Image (cartoon, rainbow, N blue to C red; front, side):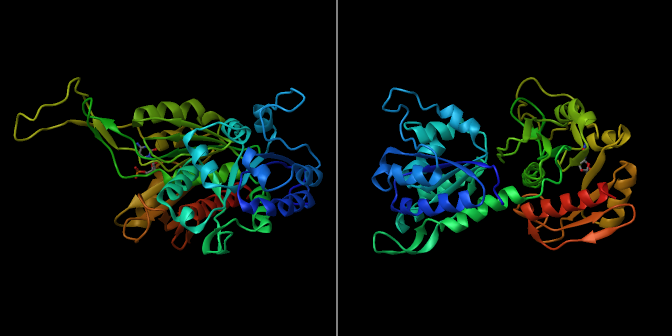
Length: 398
Ligand code: C5P
Protein backbone atom coordinates (compact mmCIF):
# COMPACT_ATOMS: atom_id res chain seq x y z
CA UNK A 1 0.00 0.00 0.00
CA UNK A 2 1.38 3.30 -1.15
CA UNK A 3 0.75 5.25 2.05
CA UNK A 4 1.36 2.44 4.53
CA UNK A 5 1.70 3.88 8.08
CA UNK A 6 1.90 7.47 6.84
CA UNK A 7 0.34 9.91 9.28
CA UNK A 8 -1.88 12.32 7.38
CA UNK A 9 -3.27 15.43 9.02
CA UNK A 10 -6.27 16.44 6.95
CA UNK A 11 -7.50 19.98 7.56
CA UNK A 12 -10.86 21.02 6.17
CA UNK A 13 -11.95 24.61 5.78
CA UNK A 14 -15.45 25.89 5.08
CA UNK A 15 -16.15 25.47 1.39
CA UNK A 16 -18.80 23.43 -0.38
CA UNK A 17 -16.09 21.07 -1.68
CA UNK A 18 -15.79 19.82 1.90
CA UNK A 19 -18.47 17.24 1.03
CA UNK A 20 -15.88 15.45 -1.14
CA UNK A 21 -13.50 14.96 1.77
CA UNK A 22 -15.29 11.81 2.86
CA UNK A 23 -14.06 10.21 -0.37
CA UNK A 24 -10.56 11.52 0.17
CA UNK A 25 -10.41 10.01 3.67
CA UNK A 26 -11.61 6.66 2.30
CA UNK A 27 -8.99 6.76 -0.42
CA UNK A 28 -6.15 7.69 1.99
CA UNK A 29 -7.14 4.92 4.40
CA UNK A 30 -7.36 2.41 1.54
CA UNK A 31 -3.78 3.35 0.66
CA UNK A 32 -2.69 2.50 4.22
CA UNK A 33 -2.56 5.98 5.80
CA UNK A 34 -3.57 6.92 9.31
CA UNK A 35 -5.80 9.98 9.07
CA UNK A 36 -6.44 12.68 11.67
CA UNK A 37 -9.04 15.27 10.68
CA UNK A 38 -9.08 18.84 11.92
CA UNK A 39 -11.56 21.41 10.68
CA UNK A 40 -12.19 25.13 10.90
CA UNK A 41 -15.36 26.09 12.76
CA UNK A 42 -17.09 27.10 9.53
CA UNK A 43 -16.28 23.73 7.90
CA UNK A 44 -18.67 22.19 10.42
CA UNK A 45 -21.52 23.75 8.41
CA UNK A 46 -20.59 21.58 5.43
CA UNK A 47 -19.72 18.10 6.74
CA UNK A 48 -20.57 16.25 9.88
CA UNK A 49 -17.94 15.37 12.44
CA UNK A 50 -19.69 12.05 12.91
CA UNK A 51 -19.15 11.01 9.29
CA UNK A 52 -15.55 12.25 9.29
CA UNK A 53 -14.64 10.54 12.53
CA UNK A 54 -16.31 7.29 11.47
CA UNK A 55 -14.41 7.22 8.20
CA UNK A 56 -11.07 8.36 9.67
CA UNK A 57 -11.45 6.16 12.78
CA UNK A 58 -10.29 9.09 14.90
CA UNK A 59 -12.00 11.91 16.78
CA UNK A 60 -12.32 15.13 14.78
CA UNK A 61 -11.35 18.47 16.30
CA UNK A 62 -12.31 22.02 15.37
CA UNK A 63 -11.57 23.97 18.51
CA UNK A 64 -8.67 24.53 20.87
CA UNK A 65 -10.73 22.99 23.69
CA UNK A 66 -13.03 20.00 23.78
CA UNK A 67 -16.36 20.06 25.62
CA UNK A 68 -14.92 18.06 28.52
CA UNK A 69 -12.39 20.85 29.13
CA UNK A 70 -9.33 19.18 27.55
CA UNK A 71 -6.91 21.14 25.42
CA UNK A 72 -6.51 20.00 21.81
CA UNK A 73 -2.78 20.44 21.50
CA UNK A 74 -2.05 21.88 18.07
CA UNK A 75 1.70 21.38 18.51
CA UNK A 76 1.21 17.68 19.08
CA UNK A 77 -0.94 17.31 15.95
CA UNK A 78 1.71 19.16 13.96
CA UNK A 79 4.58 17.05 15.24
CA UNK A 80 2.63 13.81 14.78
CA UNK A 81 2.00 14.39 11.07
CA UNK A 82 4.15 13.11 8.19
CA UNK A 83 2.15 15.36 5.90
CA UNK A 84 -0.51 18.04 6.26
CA UNK A 85 -3.22 18.55 3.66
CA UNK A 86 -5.50 21.57 3.56
CA UNK A 87 -8.49 20.50 1.49
CA UNK A 88 -10.59 22.28 0.60
CA UNK A 89 -8.52 25.37 1.31
CA UNK A 90 -10.72 28.46 1.09
CA UNK A 91 -9.47 31.91 0.06
CA UNK A 92 -9.88 32.95 3.69
CA UNK A 93 -7.83 30.09 5.18
CA UNK A 94 -5.16 30.46 2.49
CA UNK A 95 -4.83 34.16 3.22
CA UNK A 96 -4.57 33.59 6.96
CA UNK A 97 -1.96 30.86 6.47
CA UNK A 98 0.42 32.96 4.45
CA UNK A 99 0.02 36.02 6.65
CA UNK A 100 0.47 34.33 9.99
CA UNK A 101 -3.07 34.73 11.30
CA UNK A 102 -3.70 32.02 13.77
CA UNK A 103 -7.23 32.28 15.11
CA UNK A 104 -8.37 28.68 14.94
CA UNK A 105 -7.04 25.19 15.58
CA UNK A 106 -6.26 24.47 11.90
CA UNK A 107 -4.17 27.63 11.54
CA UNK A 108 -2.32 27.18 14.84
CA UNK A 109 -1.51 23.61 13.83
CA UNK A 110 -0.36 24.76 10.39
CA UNK A 111 1.98 27.30 11.99
CA UNK A 112 3.51 24.61 14.18
CA UNK A 113 3.96 22.10 11.34
CA UNK A 114 7.39 21.18 10.06
CA UNK A 115 6.15 18.43 7.74
CA UNK A 116 5.42 18.92 4.02
CA UNK A 117 2.18 20.86 3.44
CA UNK A 118 -0.22 20.29 0.52
CA UNK A 119 -2.88 22.84 -0.36
CA UNK A 120 -5.94 22.04 -2.48
CA UNK A 121 -7.66 25.40 -2.99
CA UNK A 122 -11.37 25.58 -3.76
CA UNK A 123 -13.35 28.73 -4.44
CA UNK A 124 -15.47 30.48 -7.01
CA UNK A 125 -13.71 31.33 -10.26
CA UNK A 126 -13.45 35.08 -9.66
CA UNK A 127 -12.05 34.53 -6.19
CA UNK A 128 -9.53 32.08 -7.67
CA UNK A 129 -8.50 34.65 -10.29
CA UNK A 130 -8.27 37.51 -7.78
CA UNK A 131 -4.75 38.99 -7.52
CA UNK A 132 -4.75 38.43 -3.76
CA UNK A 133 -5.43 34.69 -4.18
CA UNK A 134 -2.77 34.41 -6.87
CA UNK A 135 -0.28 36.21 -4.69
CA UNK A 136 -1.17 34.08 -1.66
CA UNK A 137 -0.70 30.88 -3.66
CA UNK A 138 2.67 32.17 -4.84
CA UNK A 139 3.63 32.95 -1.25
CA UNK A 140 2.58 29.48 -0.16
CA UNK A 141 4.74 28.03 -2.93
CA UNK A 142 7.64 30.23 -1.79
CA UNK A 143 7.22 28.75 1.69
CA UNK A 144 7.90 25.39 0.05
CA UNK A 145 4.30 24.14 0.14
CA UNK A 146 2.82 21.98 -2.61
CA UNK A 147 -0.20 23.42 -4.41
CA UNK A 148 -2.70 21.06 -5.99
CA UNK A 149 -4.37 23.49 -8.39
CA UNK A 150 -8.13 23.86 -8.59
CA UNK A 151 -9.73 22.30 -11.64
CA UNK A 152 -12.06 23.63 -14.30
CA UNK A 153 -15.73 22.82 -14.15
CA UNK A 154 -19.12 23.64 -12.71
CA UNK A 155 -19.05 25.61 -9.48
CA UNK A 156 -21.49 25.84 -6.59
CA UNK A 157 -22.39 29.37 -7.68
CA UNK A 158 -23.73 28.03 -10.98
CA UNK A 159 -20.81 29.59 -12.82
CA UNK A 160 -18.30 27.50 -14.64
CA UNK A 161 -14.50 27.91 -14.59
CA UNK A 162 -11.38 27.16 -12.58
CA UNK A 163 -11.99 26.91 -8.86
CA UNK A 164 -13.29 23.39 -8.17
CA UNK A 165 -11.17 21.53 -5.68
CA UNK A 166 -9.06 18.85 -7.35
CA UNK A 167 -10.81 15.47 -7.24
CA UNK A 168 -10.12 13.38 -4.11
CA UNK A 169 -8.34 10.73 -6.23
CA UNK A 170 -6.00 13.40 -7.61
CA UNK A 171 -5.18 14.66 -4.13
CA UNK A 172 -4.59 11.15 -2.78
CA UNK A 173 -2.42 10.28 -5.79
CA UNK A 174 -0.26 13.41 -5.36
CA UNK A 175 0.34 12.55 -1.71
CA UNK A 176 1.14 8.94 -2.59
CA UNK A 177 3.50 10.05 -5.39
CA UNK A 178 5.28 12.36 -2.97
CA UNK A 179 6.03 9.49 -0.60
CA UNK A 180 6.65 7.01 -3.40
CA UNK A 181 9.81 8.75 -4.54
CA UNK A 182 12.31 6.07 -3.78
CA UNK A 183 14.46 6.94 -0.81
CA UNK A 184 17.55 6.29 -2.86
CA UNK A 185 19.67 8.75 -0.89
CA UNK A 186 18.65 7.64 2.59
CA UNK A 187 21.61 7.76 5.01
CA UNK A 188 23.55 10.05 2.66
CA UNK A 189 24.54 13.61 3.49
CA UNK A 190 24.48 16.00 0.56
CA UNK A 191 26.16 19.38 0.80
CA UNK A 192 25.00 21.94 -1.75
CA UNK A 193 26.16 25.50 -2.43
CA UNK A 194 23.68 27.78 -4.20
CA UNK A 195 23.05 31.33 -5.33
CA UNK A 196 25.42 34.22 -5.92
CA UNK A 197 27.85 35.78 -3.48
CA UNK A 198 28.00 39.49 -2.72
CA UNK A 199 31.40 41.05 -2.16
CA UNK A 200 31.18 44.34 -0.28
CA UNK A 201 32.77 47.46 -1.76
CA UNK A 202 31.57 49.79 1.00
CA UNK A 203 28.66 49.68 3.49
CA UNK A 204 26.08 50.08 0.70
CA UNK A 205 27.58 48.57 -2.46
CA UNK A 206 28.71 45.16 -3.54
CA UNK A 207 29.92 43.14 -6.51
CA UNK A 208 27.48 40.35 -7.30
CA UNK A 209 25.93 38.41 -10.15
CA UNK A 210 22.53 37.38 -11.51
CA UNK A 211 22.43 33.86 -10.08
CA UNK A 212 18.97 33.20 -8.61
CA UNK A 213 19.83 30.12 -6.55
CA UNK A 214 16.96 28.19 -8.20
CA UNK A 215 19.16 25.35 -9.50
CA UNK A 216 20.79 24.65 -6.13
CA UNK A 217 17.48 24.91 -4.25
CA UNK A 218 15.85 22.48 -6.71
CA UNK A 219 18.68 19.98 -6.19
CA UNK A 220 18.36 20.41 -2.42
CA UNK A 221 14.63 19.70 -2.50
CA UNK A 222 15.00 16.68 -4.75
CA UNK A 223 17.83 15.22 -2.65
CA UNK A 224 15.75 15.74 0.51
CA UNK A 225 12.76 14.01 -1.12
CA UNK A 226 15.05 11.08 -1.85
CA UNK A 227 15.78 10.79 1.84
CA UNK A 228 19.17 12.55 2.04
CA UNK A 229 20.20 14.84 4.85
CA UNK A 230 20.83 18.10 3.00
CA UNK A 231 23.13 20.93 4.06
CA UNK A 232 22.24 23.85 1.81
CA UNK A 233 24.61 26.83 1.91
CA UNK A 234 23.20 29.71 -0.04
CA UNK A 235 24.41 33.16 -0.93
CA UNK A 236 21.85 36.00 -1.13
CA UNK A 237 18.85 34.45 -2.90
CA UNK A 238 15.14 35.11 -2.62
CA UNK A 239 14.41 31.37 -2.95
CA UNK A 240 12.76 29.76 0.07
CA UNK A 241 12.63 26.16 1.09
CA UNK A 242 11.07 24.17 3.91
CA UNK A 243 11.80 20.49 4.37
CA UNK A 244 12.53 18.53 7.51
CA UNK A 245 15.63 16.98 5.83
CA UNK A 246 17.16 20.33 4.87
CA UNK A 247 19.41 22.50 7.03
CA UNK A 248 19.85 25.85 5.33
CA UNK A 249 22.62 28.37 6.05
CA UNK A 250 22.48 31.78 4.44
CA UNK A 251 25.77 33.57 3.81
CA UNK A 252 26.77 36.69 1.90
CA UNK A 253 30.37 36.60 0.69
CA UNK A 254 32.59 33.90 -0.81
CA UNK A 255 34.70 33.87 2.35
CA UNK A 256 31.62 33.24 4.51
CA UNK A 257 30.52 30.50 2.11
CA UNK A 258 33.99 28.96 2.29
CA UNK A 259 33.93 28.87 6.11
CA UNK A 260 30.43 27.38 6.25
CA UNK A 261 31.23 24.75 3.63
CA UNK A 262 34.27 23.50 5.53
CA UNK A 263 32.32 23.28 8.78
CA UNK A 264 30.29 20.56 7.06
CA UNK A 265 32.37 19.14 4.21
CA UNK A 266 33.89 16.26 6.19
CA UNK A 267 30.37 14.87 6.88
CA UNK A 268 29.28 14.98 3.24
CA UNK A 269 28.94 11.92 1.03
CA UNK A 270 28.07 14.06 -1.98
CA UNK A 271 28.98 17.73 -2.49
CA UNK A 272 27.39 19.77 -5.26
CA UNK A 273 28.74 23.26 -5.91
CA UNK A 274 26.07 25.11 -7.88
CA UNK A 275 26.82 28.53 -6.39
CA UNK A 276 28.02 31.29 -8.69
CA UNK A 277 30.83 32.40 -6.42
CA UNK A 278 32.42 35.75 -7.22
CA UNK A 279 35.98 35.13 -8.37
CA UNK A 280 37.28 38.43 -6.97
CA UNK A 281 36.47 40.68 -4.02
CA UNK A 282 37.57 44.23 -3.21
CA UNK A 283 40.92 44.17 -1.39
CA UNK A 284 39.70 46.78 1.08
CA UNK A 285 36.08 47.35 2.12
CA UNK A 286 35.64 51.10 2.59
CA UNK A 287 34.31 51.90 6.05
CA UNK A 288 32.21 54.79 4.78
CA UNK A 289 30.18 55.12 1.60
CA UNK A 290 32.58 56.04 -1.23
CA UNK A 291 31.90 59.59 -2.47
CA UNK A 292 31.71 60.38 -6.18
CA UNK A 293 34.49 62.96 -6.20
CA UNK A 294 36.62 61.90 -9.13
CA UNK A 295 35.84 61.07 -12.75
CA UNK A 296 37.10 57.58 -12.35
CA UNK A 297 37.33 55.17 -9.49
CA UNK A 298 39.65 52.22 -9.21
CA UNK A 299 38.83 49.34 -6.92
CA UNK A 300 41.57 46.81 -6.40
CA UNK A 301 40.23 43.28 -6.46
CA UNK A 302 41.86 40.21 -4.99
CA UNK A 303 41.10 36.60 -5.75
CA UNK A 304 38.50 34.85 -3.62
CA UNK A 305 39.19 31.39 -2.28
CA UNK A 306 38.07 28.74 -4.77
CA UNK A 307 35.71 26.75 -2.59
CA UNK A 308 35.24 23.88 -5.01
CA UNK A 309 38.94 23.56 -5.78
CA UNK A 310 39.64 23.35 -2.05
CA UNK A 311 36.92 20.69 -1.72
CA UNK A 312 38.75 18.78 -4.48
CA UNK A 313 42.05 19.08 -2.62
CA UNK A 314 40.52 17.94 0.66
CA UNK A 315 38.46 15.15 -0.90
CA UNK A 316 38.47 11.86 0.95
CA UNK A 317 35.35 9.85 0.08
CA UNK A 318 33.07 12.62 -1.15
CA UNK A 319 31.54 12.44 -4.63
CA UNK A 320 32.23 15.92 -5.91
CA UNK A 321 30.10 17.76 -8.49
CA UNK A 322 30.92 21.15 -9.98
CA UNK A 323 29.10 23.46 -12.34
CA UNK A 324 30.52 25.31 -15.30
CA UNK A 325 28.98 28.21 -17.16
CA UNK A 326 31.04 28.72 -20.29
CA UNK A 327 30.78 31.01 -23.28
CA UNK A 328 33.45 29.46 -25.49
CA UNK A 329 35.17 26.06 -25.94
CA UNK A 330 32.55 24.89 -23.52
CA UNK A 331 33.20 21.17 -23.30
CA UNK A 332 36.95 21.57 -23.34
CA UNK A 333 36.90 24.17 -20.56
CA UNK A 334 34.47 22.14 -18.49
CA UNK A 335 36.67 19.05 -18.82
CA UNK A 336 39.67 21.18 -17.82
CA UNK A 337 37.84 22.19 -14.64
CA UNK A 338 36.93 18.59 -13.90
CA UNK A 339 40.68 17.83 -13.73
CA UNK A 340 41.88 21.06 -12.15
CA UNK A 341 39.39 20.88 -9.30
CA UNK A 342 39.58 17.09 -8.86
CA UNK A 343 35.85 16.61 -9.54
CA UNK A 344 33.91 13.42 -10.19
CA UNK A 345 31.50 15.14 -12.52
CA UNK A 346 30.73 18.56 -13.89
CA UNK A 347 27.43 20.06 -15.05
CA UNK A 348 27.88 22.35 -18.01
CA UNK A 349 25.33 25.01 -18.85
CA UNK A 350 25.93 27.25 -21.78
CA UNK A 351 24.99 30.91 -21.91
CA UNK A 352 24.41 30.42 -25.63
CA UNK A 353 21.43 28.14 -25.08
CA UNK A 354 18.17 30.01 -24.77
CA UNK A 355 16.50 29.29 -21.42
CA UNK A 356 19.67 27.89 -19.87
CA UNK A 357 21.74 29.19 -17.01
CA UNK A 358 21.33 31.83 -14.37
CA UNK A 359 18.04 33.56 -13.85
CA UNK A 360 15.22 31.53 -15.37
CA UNK A 361 13.18 28.57 -14.23
CA UNK A 362 14.63 26.29 -16.93
CA UNK A 363 18.05 24.92 -17.73
CA UNK A 364 19.76 22.88 -20.44
CA UNK A 365 22.77 20.92 -19.34
CA UNK A 366 25.48 18.51 -20.32
CA UNK A 367 26.94 16.19 -17.70
CA UNK A 368 30.61 15.40 -18.15
CA UNK A 369 32.70 12.85 -16.30
CA UNK A 370 36.18 11.57 -17.03
CA UNK A 371 34.83 9.10 -19.57
CA UNK A 372 31.29 10.23 -20.48
CA UNK A 373 29.39 13.16 -21.94
CA UNK A 374 25.59 13.25 -21.75
CA UNK A 375 23.44 15.97 -23.20
CA UNK A 376 19.96 16.78 -21.84
CA UNK A 377 17.08 18.78 -23.35
CA UNK A 378 15.74 22.09 -22.00
CA UNK A 379 13.74 21.34 -18.84
CA UNK A 380 12.48 22.99 -15.68
CA UNK A 381 15.18 23.27 -13.02
CA UNK A 382 13.19 20.80 -10.89
CA UNK A 383 13.47 18.22 -13.70
CA UNK A 384 17.14 19.06 -14.25
CA UNK A 385 17.72 18.44 -10.53
CA UNK A 386 16.30 14.94 -11.01
CA UNK A 387 18.60 14.27 -13.99
CA UNK A 388 21.64 15.43 -12.01
CA UNK A 389 20.82 13.28 -8.98
CA UNK A 390 19.94 10.24 -11.12
CA UNK A 391 23.36 10.59 -12.69
CA UNK A 392 25.11 10.99 -9.34
CA UNK A 393 23.33 7.90 -8.00
CA UNK A 394 24.36 5.88 -11.05
CA UNK A 395 27.98 6.92 -10.52
CA UNK A 396 28.17 6.23 -6.79
CA UNK A 397 26.54 2.82 -7.19
CA UNK A 398 29.01 1.78 -9.87
O1 C5P B 1 36.24 28.11 -12.10
P1 C5P B 1 34.81 28.41 -12.19
O2 C5P B 1 34.38 29.54 -11.32
O3 C5P B 1 34.27 28.56 -13.57
O4 C5P B 1 34.12 27.06 -11.65
C1 C5P B 1 32.77 26.98 -11.41
C2 C5P B 1 32.53 25.98 -10.32
O5 C5P B 1 33.39 26.25 -9.20
C3 C5P B 1 31.13 26.04 -9.75
O6 C5P B 1 30.78 24.73 -9.35
C4 C5P B 1 31.27 26.98 -8.56
O7 C5P B 1 30.29 26.73 -7.57
C5 C5P B 1 32.66 26.66 -8.05
N1 C5P B 1 33.39 27.80 -7.47
C6 C5P B 1 33.67 27.82 -6.12
N2 C5P B 1 34.39 28.85 -5.57
C7 C5P B 1 34.85 29.84 -6.35
C8 C5P B 1 34.58 29.85 -7.72
C9 C5P B 1 33.84 28.82 -8.24
O8 C5P B 1 33.22 26.91 -5.40
N3 C5P B 1 35.53 30.82 -5.81
